[in-house]
Amino acid sequence: ISENPDNILTLSDYASYTYSQIAYIVNSLNSLLKQHEVRDNDIVTVFVDRNHWTLITALSCLSQGITYVPIDENHPDKRIEFMIRQSESKAIIVTGAFQKRVEKIDDESNVNLNIINISSLLDDVKTSNHVDYVDSCVNDVACIFYTSGTTGNPKGIVLANSNFNAMAMQISQLFTKLEVNDHILAIMPIFHGFGLGICVHTSFCFGLKAILQPKSERKSLDKLIIDYKPNMVTGVPTI
Image 1 (cartoon, one colour):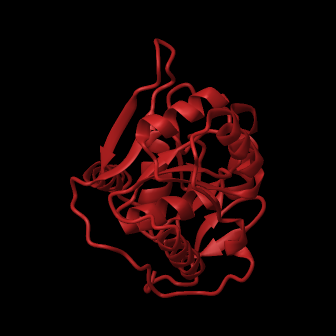
Image 2: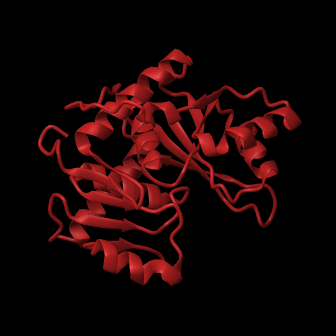
């Protein structure tokens, strides 16, 4: 952040934010979580738009030692309820688009959710040259991803800080010509380990620019590549 404060960290069709702006927003979210008594080693469910919010919430949780449980908007309500209960989340972070849906789940299931709407954090964005963080261990749990549940209830897959750091280092070794401010086009879902680990964590570690799109489909991939001219596109073989 201090080395590249004015470089773009996240870019989409709707907005772009620099490293120093993202740092300011992340610190604001860190303060908001503390107000809601969410601390290190707690677990939070995250149900936000697939754009800069994904990156902001992930960096906030990682910096505070909070375990991140991402929700895909395509998940049915019963699956979301199961994930919240099974993970024992202390709170659920939402943006405006998902507030009513989460409230409906809460009313129908009596989960007693601590709902934290973070939409207002973009109302007055300033800059910061650092992100406040707490000390954590490499083996602390960073994220819990849930399987599709096609053979029963979804199963939680636990990834530690060391798993995300290993992914970042592997990318740096595979793509030795990547330089600060190069572009990564994020077409993988962020509720997927590689989506969060490569498109978000790796971008932040090496000063890259993450191009985040609300929806990335194969039929629109060619347009995204033409428009943004990424240096790297991360995907799975079917893509």
